[in-house]
Length: 81
Image (cartoon, rainbow, N blue to C red; front, side, top):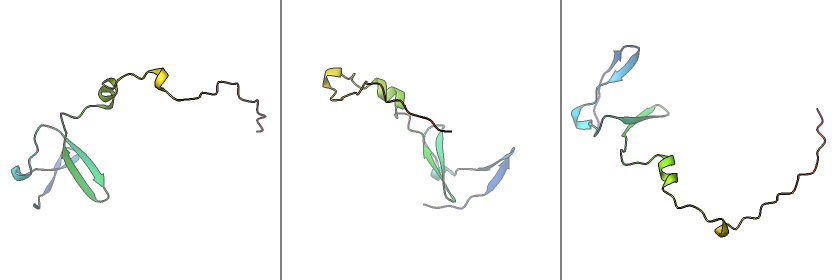
C-alpha cells in the first residue's frame, strides 16, 4: 500500500498526518532513519526491557561454570612516554 501525503510545519518540527488506512495500534511508534527512508513501527507493549528479561533468567550455579580464572599478579611493565 502506498499513498502520497504532505509535510507541514508543527512548531519547529516538520510533521506528517498518518491516514486512517495506515493507522497503528497504541499511542507510540518507533521511528528509524535508514538512508533517505524513514520507517515507523508500532511499539510492542509485550516486549520486555533487557533488565526485565535478565531478572527473569535462572541464576547461575558457580559449580556449573567451566571457567579457569588466572588470579596471579600480572608481570610489571615499563611504561615509556
